[in-house]
Image (cartoon, rainbow, N blue to C red; front, side):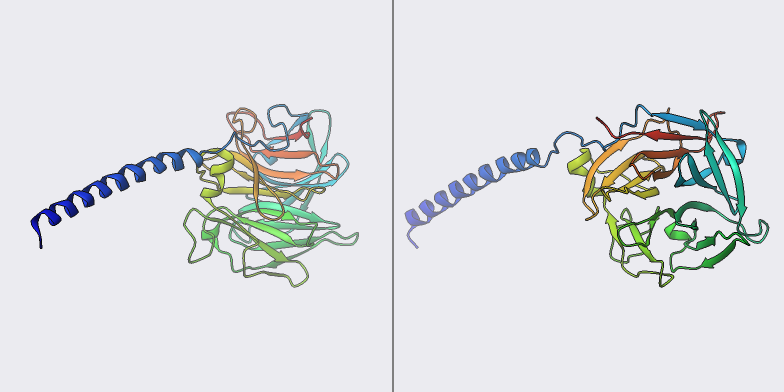
Length: 301
């Protein structure tokens, strides 16, 4: 090979390599800029200014779930006792109007995390995945326990009635139950009320990366309560562990909005529900020598 030809080829090759490296560096910084999210999209409710709040008695210090029943009346459950509490919302206090014990207290060690109401039937969720169906009757209340394939490792904490399907949604606080998903992925499953069984595939998945465009960063999200809006059918999910926040999803499972929760107002939020007009209710456990509370929030104007 001619020596001059070799030197010319080598010079051209070095020049092309230099141009490639120079160009490849610049798009990186541009790409990094384009993935930066827009401003934080807040949920439809003003969590900083509750319309009302009601203090609760010591019996409900560990309140873990609430459900709307009728005007000025909610149903509640707390962690350790198989009891449904009918709560009358007064001026400033939530008064226990009735108690429904649906299981013998000493029979098992319970950890009830949420409940849902469908007509005259209530459903209570155990953290190990079992659902208790409590049917109210004029003669005698009855309770039926249904096991699902969800287990302790899934840590089922959220239960809600879905008016679209007529079924129940169960939120897993920990493991999704799916082999190929990341450990940080959270799953919502659908319980078929007619078949009395849990559907095998998740209703929706929550991924850390989903929060980047809305929140501005990846979020460790641990579902503790779930509710479906009666009018828009948006799905609201509260996270309590590590990240205290509330996320709003459209019914087609897309993250729409997100808000961090003020710990001064809601130190340990564990329950969420809506009334038929779309007002939002959130319960918080007793913390820092203060009683448990239920708060009412209105849609932002």
